[in-house]
Length: 492
Image (spheres, rainbow, N blue to C red):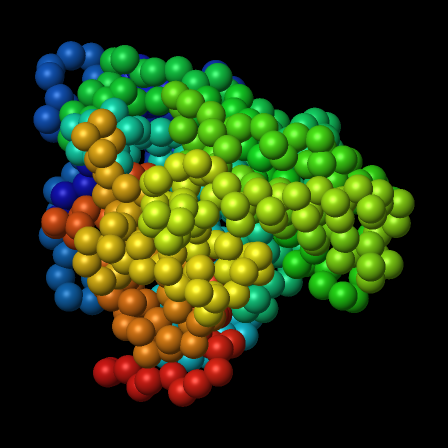
């Protein structure tokens, strides 16, 4: 076996000086920060493989292990020197076993039992690993600039939290038994929006602040020569009106019909209602974060409707007080009329991407998910038929919208799971299971998904693993579990 330790700090701009600390292992000092590497086998200085000669240095070792033998390594980080040095030998195995036991106990809290238990639990583990423990927030992905198109420029930094995911997150976590994690996420959500409301940011960092200004790392070629490599995300500067519905629906779903809301949360919800009533007609960048134009997106209108609908229901349950009920009811009705007339394309017999558009978009499936229309209605069935015709290259894959010469990308993985939920809600259970299993087959060997899938090769595209996709897996499985009808027995 061979091990190579070749750290590159500050996005490869800093080649660290690796020092031999004797019995304490090897250390790298970066300001007050300390990295410490310890090993059961002897490590020696070496030149990194695959890099030109220079002052860069690495550590490496080649050794032989027989059946039943093991060696231990530990890499620790301390924000301030001196570092706490973890022991090796027997304690490594003990700590490993404790870690495995903790994760098994956490996974065991799930109330999901069914034929899809493995992918559901794997998705739950992904979400937990993407969460920032001190606050409970879940980032979209742990990576930046993995390309949506190999060799292309659709490369973004996803190491932040999107309000877009809020409603789906609470539905997923609360839906299969993780109340503490759901509560932690909602607490972070309320903290993050407190400073900017009623205007909500689209993206936040794990501390509830705005992410760094987007900039390009021009010294990096990018994965598979796909550049630019970006740090930060300019979506934080966009207007996306759908986030109001996401936040309100997350709070509404979390409290259900059981609890009352404290005064500050009630104030926030009233502010959201006022903002939506005043601004829902404005064009925005939409859920897909179009950078070159704003439009009256159907999904943004839908989520504005959701915001007012949930607020009015909380007011009716006396969980919320002081809402301008008549005003909210009037604007909710106007939004519905706008969607039913402006977003319905009679020539296509489908709800389309934006009012007055002729572009089919998978977000139309969410009209049923959020209760705007029944999945079994004629309009939703016709819309689904158009989605099947134009957005489904093969079973289990769905493009988020129609491809064009200027924009060609992979199938958007979460949209496949939206289709599963839609099929389950309109009673097409056999088909829903078939689509679900076809979509799950595109996961890797440990059931992880990225943002997109190449329909030709089945390869994962985009940042990886992707929280949005794994939320889709969980919510689709919950929808199948909660639907009426027999679940087909799967092959073992």
